Image (spheres, rainbow, N blue to C red):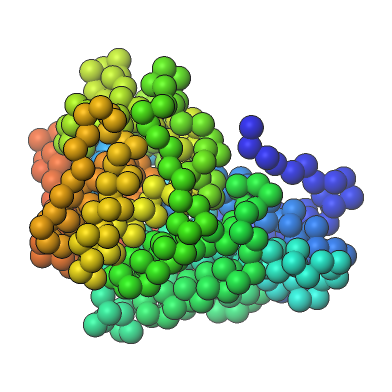
Amino acid sequence: MRHSYIFKKHTMKKYLILLILAFAVAGCKKFLDAKPDGRQILPEDDLQNLQYFLDDTYTINQRIPSAGEVCSDNIYFTDELWQGLFQSSATSANLYIWSRNVFNDNDSNDWTVGYKIVFNANVVLDAIDKTPYKSAAERDDVKGQALFFRALAFYHLLQEFAKPYNPATASADKGIVLRLSADISKPSSRASLAQSYEQVIADLQSAVQLLRVTPKFKSRPSKTAALGLLSRVYLATGDYINSLKYANDYLTIAPELIDYNTQSPSPSYPFPSYNKEVTFDARLFPHTAFSAAYFRVNSSLFNSYAANDLRRTLYFQDGSDGNIMFRGSYYGSRQLFGGIATDEIYLNAAESSARVGNTAHAMALINELCEKRYRSDNFTPFVAADSKSALEIILAERRKELAFRNLRWMDIRRLSRDPDFAVSVSRTVSGTTYELPAGSEKLVLPIPQKVIDLGGIEQN
């Protein structure tokens, strides 16, 4: 059972106004217009109060922005399911066909949930230098957690509301709003894409120096998780040298993989929460598209798993309607995992090794992963003569391994600039075909119109 904190009665009163303001972020104007400085509304009597605020798992860990997964080529809806989805959530249905009419039917959307995480982190960062503490290590850990959470939210917002990273244009391309203080009287404007990624990386590099190697609870960030997220962020920017560096640093600490040969397919959800590959536990924001009533698996994804691939049975099951359903979440339930896990870092390291020309190391890493994913009595290690052949194997395994973790959208976006591996997606709904070609402007989602109307920032 996931840990949670019950606020002490005397602490609850102190937090009431803060929680109201955090909720008001969804209205955007409250977030952008003049309000009291966030530092004035957090009690500064001890460090534990700051930790309580970061342990707000509902706001932080259970609502990771996830619209990209609905946009990806992993998910599938029949015409009937899509029509039903449209009646329940126009945003979910429209994300599936890459329509610009999204995020306007519900104030609880990826923009607002992302910036609520940022707000929580900033309140702590604003207060921590004035807060008494008994242990410097504990103080550093709390500060590192806040920096990690802010970076995590910024990273996910960048994957939805900014262009894929291109070093040639990043200084001119629009990034996201970089809220670096809980003082919501400060005006909002979009930083450049380069500045946005620089902030994410700076926060994470600081977090690495401050965080514990192993957290008390996996819902809290750790040095290990921050190294993993750095590897992911650098992969998104195409900086393979640094992606590999931080992946290697992570794997020095946490190299252990689950051997799927020992994993029983009998439980409804074969992978327990907090399993040994998970270094940071979180789940994706539960868009209506992910509910059991609608969520089905693209047959092209399912058919990519060979008969001797243990993920074919551990990740999937037949639905009552004859379609395939996903059950392989590392969240230990039907909720989709959105945290950091060791298998992703092996794949980051393998791809980055291939990209920098170390084919032998790339193949050693991918085989180390795959020998625990395929039947041990029927697995022949992959071989590749060159980096391109290695990447073909690694990227195929990456899609299969990391299905429904909101990483496929990042991959579709970043690969759009790679002529060898660019991905185009097409789907037909009720007789109409919708296309997402590589490099499409649809790889950038529109900012909610309410944010544009009330905040005055530039639309995508």
